[in-house]
Picture 1 (cartoon, rainbow, N blue to C red):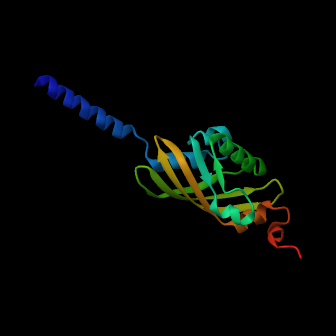
Picture 2 (cartoon, rainbow, N blue to C red):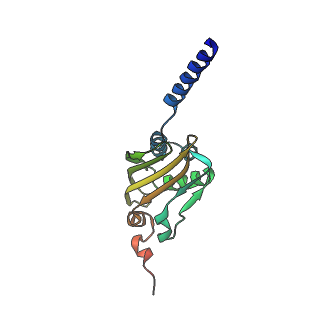
Picture 3 (cartoon, rainbow, N blue to C red):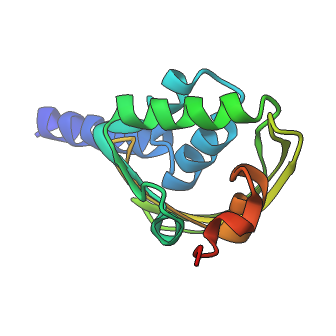
Length: 162
């Protein structure tokens, strides 16, 4: 009986300790967002599961890739963004909703691109976290801001030529 009580107390203690040390989905998502531009692209991509994905649904409307799968591909896209704007950082990160495995956050960026244009953006990001890694980060942004800052002729590049 004493042995069973001891084992039960030990199991409860381990369970409480694990619950206390588990990092929340919101904290993991926030740390990842804070790392973008502040750490190496490879370090930032390490927040993702091996086959995790970054989805940018609105990018498809402007002819850019909208789904990037795998850490190496995610690191490459982060490197591309950072190389185009040396001072790129995500700021004003606010986790507005979270569950055990999901987080929703608002955040911003304000950077000067290599072409000298300002890239000021507001984002809404949704993440699914599994075993402490991001399985999916879906990001919504204003594509007008992106095109104006990045495309060679800004919005003119989206106007069909006759």
